[in-house]
Image (cartoon, rainbow, N blue to C red; front, side, top):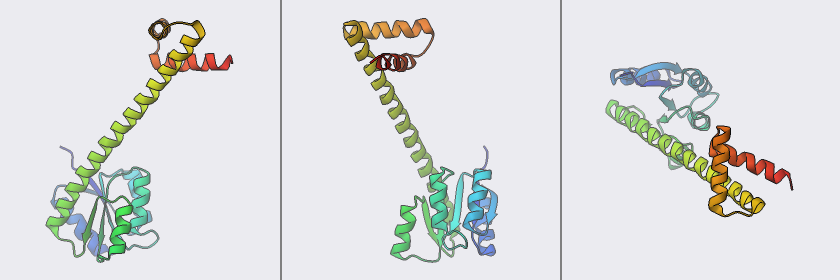
Length: 193
């Protein structure tokens, strides 16, 4: 089994090294250590880690801004580390789409458990996102088939069943999918008007 990869970012080198060591002892492979958010983001784009562990307060781009960019680009789940637990900071972190929030000093057990949960929650989220995309595509395709069928019914004054049969036959004769044939019918019959 391949080890899960991680990028750690903290402007305090000692803390970054400690976090990296804990994660490596837990079976992760640290593929990059960054000193600020910009560096963490760039490393993430090239290394494509399974997980990001970022300090909140870093120069150039803080952990929350970095988490937003990582989430927007779909680079992976982010866990935030901080010495602060103010409600406003927690709310901002939550809104940025992070999958974990830990207070410093980092507790080894809490880090391992939070990393595991973050990875699982992200995997679940990605499955739901993929299923939603499939459902949306299926619905769009179904709408196209229905529209094409309606245009054929109107054009040839035939029943819904006959229009579907006609469209299916046309698709088979041209060696294309029904949805591709539907798109072609819609294009051709609507351009005639």
